[in-house]
Image (cartoon, rainbow, N blue to C red; front, side, top):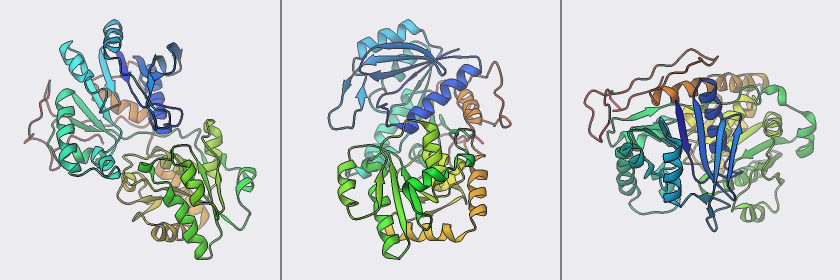
Length: 404
């Protein structure tokens, strides 16, 4: 089957989204399907790569967004979609590409929307009034436009669940357990940033308001005020870089920028004592899971989806510097072997092969060649061929079919 996937707002700095698109494409291809990814870019490209065919359409850059581009030419995109004749479409943009659900329905093509963010949460970050009502109206239209809505955690699914949508499925993402591994720990990397007696703390994510990187800086300040010799490495880029540098002027904070080499990222994460994931509206937190895979525990904001991802391999606390600093200290009180083994064990519960299987089930597709991984999960879905937005009396207490 030809699975055409579409995504806007993809840049070199959108690490989690790019990783997800790449790993799902590789998995679909391995399972015997034909994945085609359409994304925006500076120039036209049509390439065959490991994840399948990737088509880049010339797209305008949105000012003051850190390099985001959007495929705004609907007529050209329709022409391309019609020429590709997809059997399925998978959309990773709930705003500018929502119209593709209608396009698919008019042509008898099954459609899926992947919700990579909490709309209500983002509206809160942006200070929008009546955010829940606005999110509900938008999400209701999204659910009506697509055959399936996929969320990666219960947190992400909550804003759809409260609407009682019958076409909601939860499928967790995965992590590259080979690239991100405790064996990546490198004394030379650690020595580059910290002395032997210092705590090496890492923040590895985009520098945007939704990720709240300033909390990482303030956490180091709180630790040092409490006489803990902590240093911070910030691995990422974004619009808040200058403001963060000003905030960290008198603190031992190193800005490593965007690190393109995934093995170098793994070496940094594996060499850290603790990784911070302070974003309050994270719907999965792939970088935190990569840290766990490297054997490094994480401290996360308890309001986000990350508590359900990290389990007992880290600590979830309120989003303030004192709480984060206390959590770092509590993690360091655990024996090193114990905390690192717990982190790795938690990450091993998430594999990309299992995630691919779940996404294919949500597409109502089955792999021609079964990927080698964990046992096949079970997907429970309501028997609604072209679901409409109605209350499903036959669903579970949460009103949501689940991927287990």
